[in-house]
Image 1 (cartoon, rainbow, N blue to C red):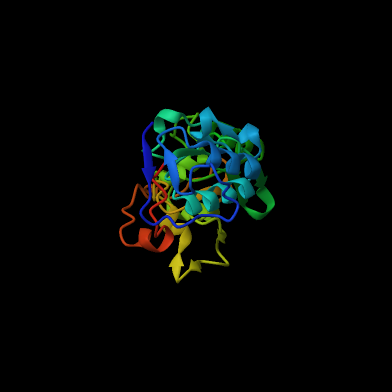
Image 2: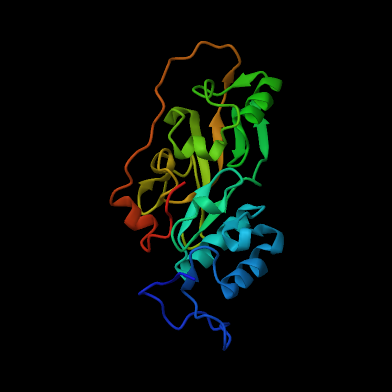
Length: 244
């Protein structure tokens, strides 16, 4: 068994019991039994899959819990908007799957739609079509692509993204949008997370700007993947996120 220990590890959480591997020590993969227990208590056993190599919370609060525990145990995470697989886990870490977060709500009267990260592009397009609205730049993407992957890859123009909800390393949830553009030490969080490839935070939901279906709109290029650079040290100082 390949055991990996973080040099920053301390004595660990007070709940550590004699005989268990010390906190911040884990295997590649699966994670060790004591860490699996901590995750199962926080998420429920049905959310800890493939011997702990895939973590699939069913809510934003569950995503927060995974990120909090991951930081406490120095557990590297790869974020997947779909189901995720153990083969995608980083060395000594796990996959954080957002595939169970699939809610979509279209508010045509106010020109905004909210979609969770695990919703497919096909499901989103169907919901928009039923309300006779659209999102600029959404067409042309693979139907089975997930909303979270689309945002992580910068597959939408910035103007189509009104805001988002994201869980930061450590577990804090931030909401960024038109009324709250600079949530984290002066940064425009929405712009930073669009195209960040899952290296800054786990985007759990987005708010999208709507246009009437069939309306002519100015063609605006997608944002694309952007280097996170020094910003990663602000969002993820311990380097927990391995991208997604």
